[in-house]
Amino acid sequence: MADDFAAEGLLAQAIPGFKPRAAQREMAQAVSDIISDRGELVVEAGTGTGKTYAYLAPALRSGKKVIISTGSKALQDQLYSRDLPTIARALDFKGRLALLKGRSNYLCLERMEQQSMAGGELQAQAMSDLVHLRGWASETVDGDISTCAAVAEDSTIWPLVTSTNDNCLGSDCPLYKECFVVKARRKSMDADVVVVNHHLFLADMVVKDSGFGELIPEADVMIFDEAHQIPDIASQYFGQQLSSRQLLDLAKDINIAYRTEIRDVQQLQKSADRLAQCAQDFRLRLGDSSFRGNLRELMQDKEVQRAFTLLDDALELCYDVIKLSLGRSALLDAAFDRAALYRARLKRLRDTSQPGFSYWYECNSRHFILALTPLSVSDRFREVMNDRPAAWIFTSATLAVNENMDHFIDRLGVKGAKTLILSSPFDYTRQALLCVPRNLPSPNQPGGARQLAIMLAPLIEANNGRCFFLCTSHQVMRELAAQFRAMLTLPVLLQGETSKGQLLKQFVAAGNALLVATSSFWEGVDVRGDALSLVIIDKLPFTSPEDPLLKARMEDCRLRGGEPFDDVQLPDAVITLKQGVGRLIRDVDDRGVLVICDNRLVMRPYGALFLNSLPPTPRTRDIDRAAAFLREREDR
Image 1 (cartoon, one colour):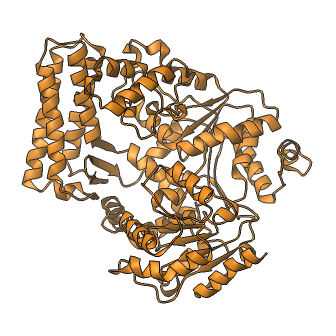
Image 2 (cartoon, rainbow, N blue to C red; image 1 turned 180 degrees about the vertical axis):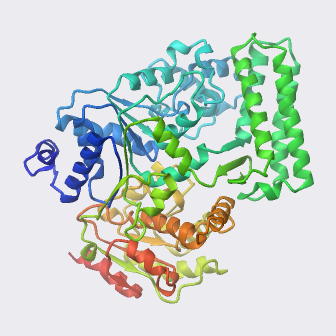
Image 3 (cartoon, one colour; image 1 turned 90 degrees about the vertical axis):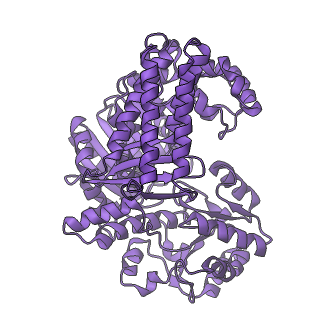
């Protein structure tokens, strides 16, 4: 393994610009040893360590079947299209590679046909997109919808022509042999290295798709990149959810079956319309705001209970009506199973007395989610690992809190794992400066966003934009963007006004932009060089104490004799802050200023925990000094 990463090794010979890094070689050796021992390893590898190559090279060298899971589909595509082929070429790897996504990422030929037959209700743009899709469907090899450039990624047609675990017909589908999901799964079964993402991995562990069996094949080596996300994602899949989107999708499929296959049973349309109406009425009963709330408290409301009962009655009616036509339509048969499943979920969600779970709901202007989430996933994830004997490797740039891995290890149940913490090779003492300005407004202070904008506009202008302003709430994000647009002549980009990918392209192309964003830009974003030299964070990223899942985790911690703030809130916030801070220095030549607009970092005792968990960066409280640091780069 050392030979591959040496100055004259295979990677240096094959990869332009490759430089040996001691931390990368150390991680590669640790991964190689764990693969040989079929053990468990948790590695924090700081930004710039080269962790991707450090696990890929020993994985390909092992000659074993390997599953690699990433934190997002974007990282999954990058790994499969760029990093994996690079290492495979360097090592002259002859094995087969495969990319596997969740089924909603692939065109469903059967649902496309259904929409074509029942397309009278489609709006003009959706109908136009459907025409483009039919042409693309005859050309695409893998059916991956991310490669269909002719249809916008937010087109309303996509949910109608892709399938989910709930509505997929499985082996009963008339077009099963042509199914892109089936083809992708077969390719992954035959491959030596398969790239998936955490959502797909965990959904597959829990759901065990009836139509396809397991999507993800057995493997000898399981590697999880961006592993800090796994506990929260696992809690989603080890719980239960029911959304208005699922209910409306069910109603739509019943209507399609009525209009295209079973026209003699008008009661199908009536029951579907009633279900759609009850789902919409239930959403209205939740109020106007977009927020997450406590389902246990919500269910105390008599009107909500009544709306809940009407929703259950509507599902029962669909179930009873479909039952009379079973066997006449594969689409309707699948809808019958979904109606039964959703009724069971509603019953489970209504029983809010079960201990060990957080019951919550979330709504926006049009939709709602009802959910229960386990307070701990460690036992369940341990079961998943025990069911799949293999080498298990977890890595991320942000796993440790104050040089300690206990928080991540306890949450995921990997107490027997070996641990390794590798610092970033970047010279933060030279490349970066941390500024916590004086005279900051208190967190959540009225008019605080305006004060922050006035205070920081000169620094942003002095840097000629090239700034990420990362916020902890959508409200503050919107207020800041409005203030900056009124004050600055620089381009001000706002998360949500277009796709994440488009925003990043616009940011880099402008060369002098300010991007105001929230959670989705705190991680998985890589902007190198002069394009980004100032990152501002509005406050320490503590989850709102009113968040029902956090409240439940804190109460559970208290019952077990722990300290909720120290054991739950603080470690979560430290890891999130480390992710945001990691946006600034992405390469050995990067240089920039990090501004954290929260006095608690220097005024509260726990501020030291945050600072000790961040890279060793010089600090100041003087904005003028921060501006001077930025000018030094311009003068070079």
